[in-house]
Image (cartoon, rainbow, N blue to C red; front, side, top):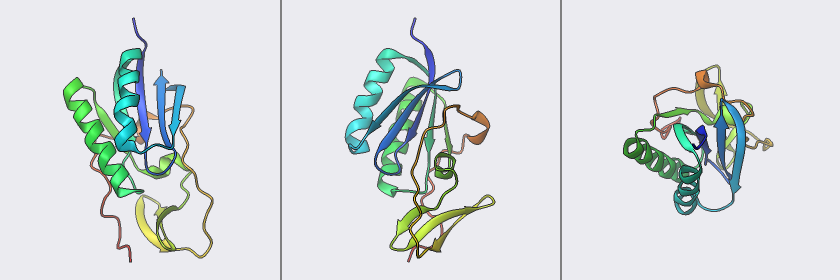
Length: 153
């Protein structure tokens, strides 16, 4: 009998991070520099052969809009086809609430619960990482990607 697991996707920048969680604890990490459009189907083919996936989670933005769209469409389709619930949270959950690159010197920042853009002269050192323990209460069923966050200009 395969292990029952949750799968988390953070595909907002390179490298892409996929975490497999058993009882909310990280048991496997997949990290790749490949494009999400090419690698997600291969990664999930292997995960679905190896595990019984109970829930899907992803970072819905901000970040690379194309990566967010691809990941959302892929996970939403998988969720519908395999009847696996899909949950999402913003990207700040995976980078200790650090600014996220938008364009030029503009960065997405989260102040309280509001996400906006700010011009920053110094580029912050920010990287995404999977949590060792998955906190379900940080995610919800509003899985629509965060496409239109503030004016980027």
